[in-house]
Length: 425
Image 1 (cartoon, rainbow, N blue to C red):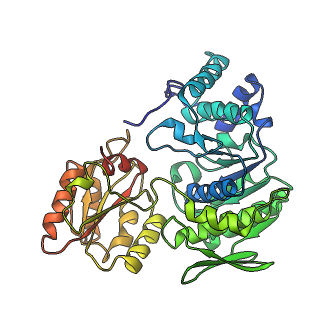
Image 2 (cartoon, rainbow, N blue to C red):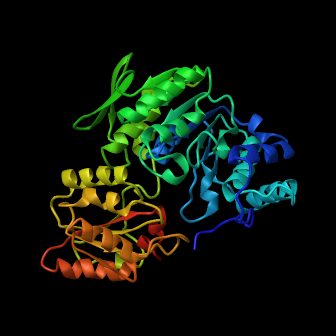
């Protein structure tokens, strides 16, 4: 199972206040560390938050800056969420901060897991010096525990799509309104590509809040080139090499990072630092080959195994487009599983006519995951051959038997926590 801190324990009641209000109460008890953070960039959106922050982090580090980052969720260890000058927080320091927060909360202020651990994270970021802090929201923005910050250098809204609709709303406008909650009067907001409905709402919210938007397609853009991509803004265009993170959608995330960096004052970031950062960015769970572990050892000669933590329909479209453009040389098989509440049919539809077969598995590291049969049933409705499997290993073996005469490629796609099974030791 994934590691979780000893505190806070899950709440078995619905708090009467919002997550941000409860977070603010505990922050006040521990000395308001949110007022002592390094200069920061706050990032919200549905897709691309983690990748955009990863690009920002590696570019800034290549330019010689000390960079903190808060990047929920984690995949293996909770420490992955709290990066202090590029390194995961150590166990002793994390335990100390959680204990301080737990004692301050007492019995009269029970905290949700994300709110409580965000307070501990802010305590860490306020105590360790850095030049800049990259802050990712947990979900939404308006009432997100991270939204206690008041004076960001800039905010970023990555592409908005349908996800977490039970909390954020059932239209793109409603979801965009929640994400726009991180905008702060007098501080610019970089907006990545958006669907028209989401973009209209972001513009409306920005006007109400007195926020200047830096819009994809209007103020900046990216174009794919043979060797990488071209970044274009009001100052002209610059050629950059292909980012280390794969997929055309990563060009947009890289461009979003560059756009945000272009707005920063008092930071010296050269084109060479940008190129170095882009080509050395690492981020677990984003279209990565699986070459080690017991699952990879099952592969016969010529077969490939890949993992991508895409877990909604828009991620699936990006992944299927990548497969169409780059993976036509081998038959493609999909192994998938995800959290309860996701629209599995919408997530699998982009793979119709792209994959040979869909294998449903249960996400063992996710406490609230669909049974393996859910993916198989959703695929069946789309007329995609499918079957449920007891384990990742069984699914991999089946794929290889199914295409015994020709080596194929297997993509494990869905919940980030499927990575545990794909990279099993």
